[in-house]
Length: 256
Image 1 (cartoon, rainbow, N blue to C red):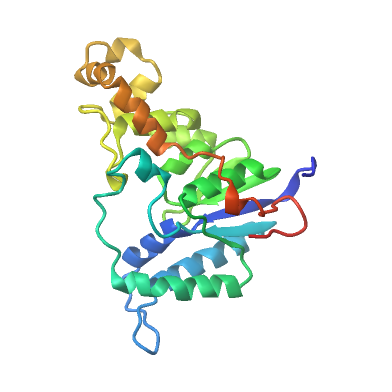
Image 2: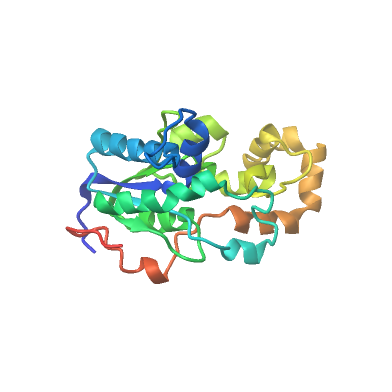
């Protein structure tokens, strides 16, 4: 690994996040000649093209969730259990989209037993230079550093460290705890009863005068073991091994 920082950014695209957002967000009746819907394909490819033109990256890697359960399901059996099945009209678009992404020359990564978030966190930690993570997933805010920033092309929002603080009220290193307290309905993570965003912010910032004696704080004290478990569920580790190992992101090429 070279010690010299790359001048151009590495863009890591959360393909799974955008796949769903494009499918549900693009209402236009886009179809292929055979009648298959193509709105998700169109949305993801348009986003990739926009990122490439805007940032002129050194590399742009697209990461999708693998099929099946992940290690988080071993930690918490009900993880994402509240999500409905994927619509057939979306499922039919996945393989054609992956084929197009490969044909366009973008490295495509799908690693079993982990989520796209975990692969992205690992790649971001290995890159010697600026990283832009393109995602709509709030869990990713915990990855933000001086060199790692977030962009959401759906909402045209960009978050550096101060951007995370402005949006959530806590710095990136407190996001994991913040989400564990708040819970996350999209991932079926319950959180602590009677702890809303203002309470979570006060607790994370140790604003003792405002939280002592409040129901949410008392519940936190009583739920300490559950909070510790929730932290593990929402954490995005940078320690993915196995199939991700061949990825070289500091050389002249990137392999996946």
